[in-house]
Image (tube, rainbow, N blue to C red):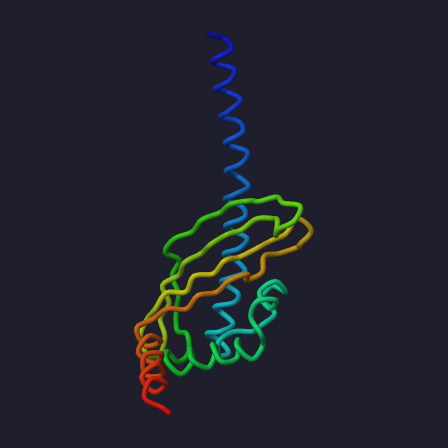
Length: 158
């Protein structure tokens, strides 16, 4: 019986220590995203690139990123407000892949032309001082309508 109680106590302690780190990671990532959104509200536009990780730009060329930002601005206009809806935190340690703490934050965002959802994957590596944006998904009805127009134009052009 004593072994059972000690095992439960040890598991509870491990859970407590691990969950504290997750909450701190979430808070730290949320602070970075708040700075990112607040900058967008104050200065307009789709946001400054220094919030994004080098890893983000390994998979998204500057040209493609500029196109995405133009589509978002054309469809939605400037950001007016944001509210955190859901979040998820996990840590990975690999020798051959990206390691560190990953925080996924999903926000309801309000724009000049409607509202949408922005899902940001934040990453902080073992040697990094702060979180950076690793992935960023924009979604709104206005973006979908604009993209559908592009698909129609492409389908009927020669």
